[in-house]
Image (cartoon, rainbow, N blue to C red; front, side, top):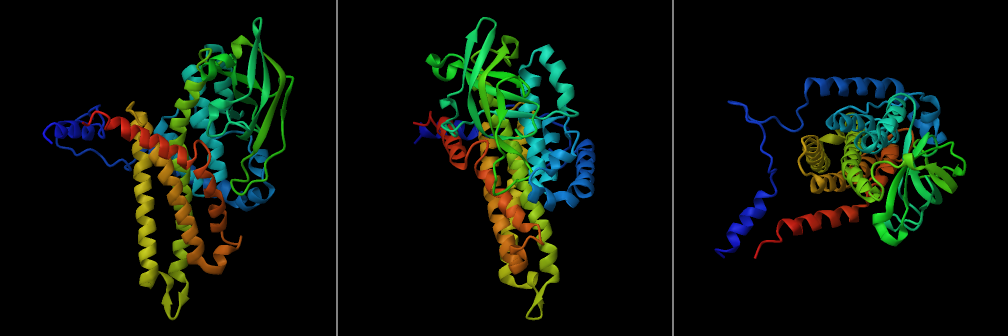
Amino acid sequence: MSRVLPSLLRSSARRFSLKPRQAVDGQEPPPVTQLSEDELNVVETVRRFSHNVIKPLVREMDEKTDLWESRSQKSTTDPAAAFSTRFLVVEELAKIDPSVSVFVDVQNTLVAPLIIEHGTEEQKKKYLPKIASEWLGSFGLSEVSSGSDAFAMKTTAKADGDDFIINGSKMWITNAGHAKFFFVFANAEPSKGYKGITCFLVDRDEKGISVGKKEDKLGIRASSTCPIHFDNVRVHKSAILGEYGKGYKYAIECLNAGRIGIGAQMIGLAQGCFDYTIPYLQQREQFGSRLIDFQGMQHQIAQVATEIEASRLLIYNAARMKGNGIPYVKQAAMAKLYGSQVATKTTSKCVEWLGGVGFTKEFPVEKFYRDCKIGTIYEGTSNIQLNTIAKLVDTEYKNVA
């Protein structure tokens, strides 16, 4: 026991950041949910935009499935924005329409960071101004035979002089219907396995590219999800993003950060659904009492409110860790896992609490119920998050005798 205790203490210490926070004499550290003045200004701006511009279109966008993209000429993104600002934008948008929030999330947690961190100067000059004003990018990783096992991809990029010839297909690609360019992950040396995977920046108008029919989805219907086919698409070696053979590494890194964005989407969705529901429970009466006055209802509401708050703390903390250069992979996986669980529970309970009206499209709650399911699937399924968390916990305790 005496030998085990020091190891346990070391393992426990790993659950805290090894990077000390800056001490401010006489002041306690601020809560992770306390926003700076700049962050509050961003949230207020996005809230006004969400209510004034997006909210009147939500039902029509859901039914027609592409109204948002066709009416929007500019993407509401800023490639240089701090990571914490990005997830706040995603959360606020998701309170009104999760479809619009994922449109912004992909642009900000996958597309822009990849170019900023790994792009050449020429690539940055070409793409960054455009994605901040008018272009969408899509992240082409998943395939028919490679979903969770992403690196089992079949798409290839065969070298031909100074060019590469890309062949294959990508599936379930978010924003593909309106994207101007794609991050195409293809294996340039299949004999090397995942170490041959290379990322290419490929413009939509290149010869040999075709975008398939939009998927008829359960939720987030205003966000286009399409297959992309590559038939002898020739690109110059200058289209490689970052280093040759490092595509697998870039995909893992940006998806780890992207999971915080999906967590923010899920908590925004849950909060938005909750915000629509509680006022109804305060007004609706049965047996001479408001629905919210029944103890059975109060206990359920309190439980959901607690879980929303707990999820928000997980997500904000993961985002703050990422923004401060602190290892965050386990916290990001936890944030996405729990955020999607809370969104699923919240929306289901809200439908039940509203009764018949919750089952109709006259109230937006049924849409939140449909939209939340994707949170357990994309950017790593819930089982993949559990695998990641368990492996990291195992690593933390591996030295315990």
